[in-house]
Image (cartoon, rainbow, N blue to C red; front, side, top):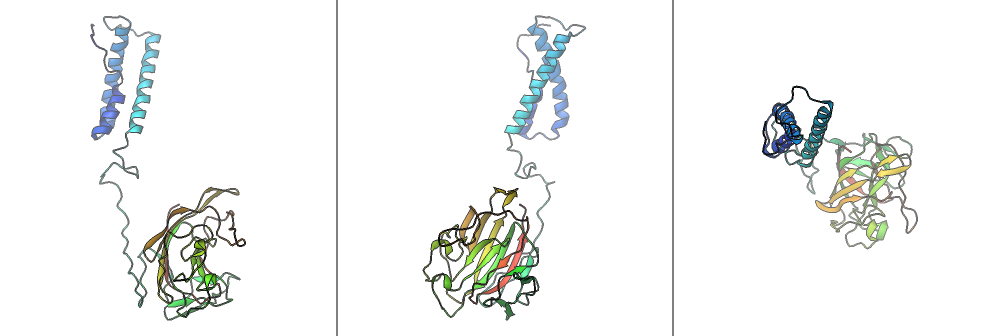
Length: 324
């Protein structure tokens, strides 16, 4: 057998590249054919390489080993080619525009609040406070009934009543909270309309009357307290209802070490004020110029609302759990 040119010995690898580029349907069927063809062409190439003009009746062990090596190299190229060309896969691992990919779950959106009327949560949310009672909450002091006031569609913190926390525990989540600082302004700096929303009971998004109220930047309304000042101050006037929409991903611990930091994206009154911020530690107050460090804790913990001695009001609180 006389052969003038070297045949394509890596036809399986070539086919994978070809099928990735041109989106061949059922590539496994064609791959089997190409593999057989590749084996035959590889045989021809090796026979030509050794100057043999016709196929022998028996293949020597050396030739068999070289054929095995050629196929192994073909497989390496094939896998490498398939791995490097991912243009035909979407980010969930499905072929682009594959009609067999499961459709997203249908969720009925909520109704936005107005200053006069509290809104409603999306259909898949866990409602933590709808304006009627604090049955989803308990005292953070002793686990007894929450001692805050609940009336007229809102809950109001009571001085010395202490923090309240959810009975249910949460990790990564989307949290919606609406609040109003007192319409009657008293105090200044951190003593004016102070409260806080604590994710996992540890990581505080500051609540404060920051309308024409001077204080340190990382203690302003919507700050990650002591860690990250908001990008802008979009606080409304005292007494007006405001909103937080918080996208939170919990920290991950391995032993006593944090291996994945918590992240926050916060919208204050619909404006992004914390943009996927990785929290460098805790938000606990540790003196005038220090904040707490990370401390290991369970994967799910309660949401807490802070009693800081000011009668801050809350309404329309709901949460949607997110994957880590």
